[in-house]
Length: 292
Image (tube, rainbow, N blue to C red; front, side, top):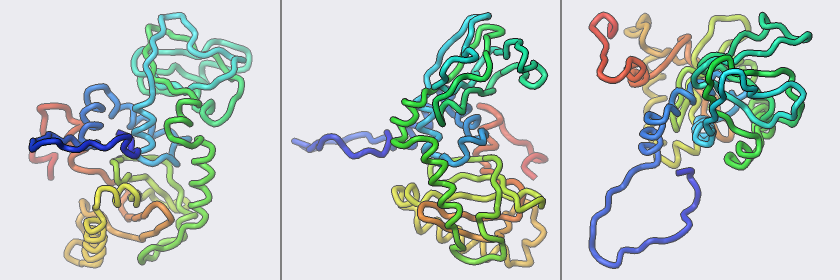
């Protein structure tokens, strides 16, 4: 389930047949049935977690537990030591009135809203009280469970990501700036082997950046596919025939570091067709106009 070494060896004592289920397929089935996919989308949008890879986000979502609170019950209390992070799955929670904070600056927490994320970084007192306005169901994870599951603290992940960002260099070719000067501020898509981030250079228009995780690519033996994809993108980006095609990603630059390959596109948005179709709901499709 979590890319760990086998605990035992199993040998066949006679001829036979087995059914096999790949870890990725099993995870997708679980996420679809338990709402983990929606939770992962929510986690990827949180700025504090932008240094987490797609497998880390998956593992974090798997380890989050659900807790329910009745209307009027306190979820967190101001002044208490905080060690857990919360995502509202259903219901509404509100920040209690107090002299130092106003409801205007802290609106109600509805579905997919989150709070308490700083507790995953360090121990500290809660700055406000959150109370269930109606019956509320939340997904939560403590700092100890997070650290134990990922094998490293969130603070260490952020520090390592910053260090790697400072050391990034060009991997292939392109006319883009040093990668350290490219800001990322959101994720629009993520899979086991790659994710797509919204990026910006200074105050220019946003662009899409594809982040490919080298270890996951190696585990799934997709090296040749990635090389072919990049070669194809370079050819298409130089082709005048497709210069004005709005649906074709236009390659700007490529970069690399120790664990990732970065592909920067001129386009401001990118996603997979499968992701778009999945978002429509089961049994629904796209009409001709939407496809065009």
